[in-house]
Length: 327
Image (cartoon, rainbow, N blue to C red; front, top):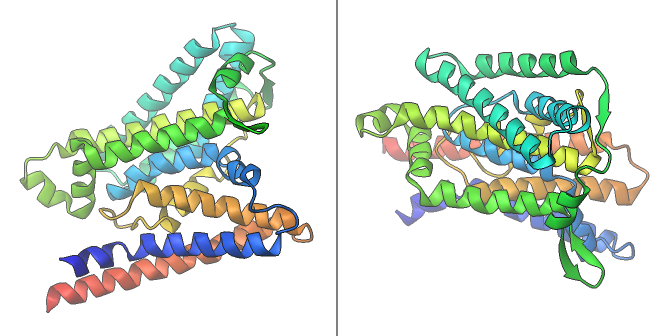
């Protein structure tokens, strides 16, 4: 039993080791520039908050054995809707945020219902959702909408002072809050346990009498909500709505989840692994910026290599698991 648990945790352990190794190497190389300072560490969370929140929602989808390609487009749609509601329709910011989160959640639930009740492929349905949400965003506004000053009071209230002229930005506070709630949902609720069961073997979960249909719809609703919240965080960070926001975000989110040790086949993984995957993204980006002589495209190259390595590691772990079950 202990050996089985150990094998299941190999991808997660590898993620942690890679993250620590990258951080250690960068801290030594850029010691004089203060890479290991608290200020830089906070940037890992604040600058990658909207990616991290979307990746947390994606974690539940992949754990259930599905995929969601619509998250980046939902982010764009939410930013545009927020801009229109707040800047042009003068809706109170909190009310506008609540409205767009409901819209994003319903959008995700709708895709989940199509996937579950019509037995359609998640890849195709969420691909359609990606085009639909991006198209709606561009239809509403092709450019960007500046949201000037309306969200400043909310940002100020959510910013957490850490002393010594150091603050935890509102975006990082929201990201960490979502992470804590997601961990509780994944490991301490029947919904979370059902998600793992579906990802492990959906037919067995159905035979066990678990609420498979409701949970699968709920997983995509949760992903839609997280994508919507990522859009809100993007607006808090940029003070604007943009129909081109979130391009490629779905790929970043999937990469963070996989690098975080969650198996693409579903049923195995941790929300904590996704957090480590997002931090790894942040370390790579910061190291390249500190270097100063490298193109930002090196971030994609390094992440691509890491992703390939972790996919191969997953295949090795799954192959050993199959060999173990046949002997």
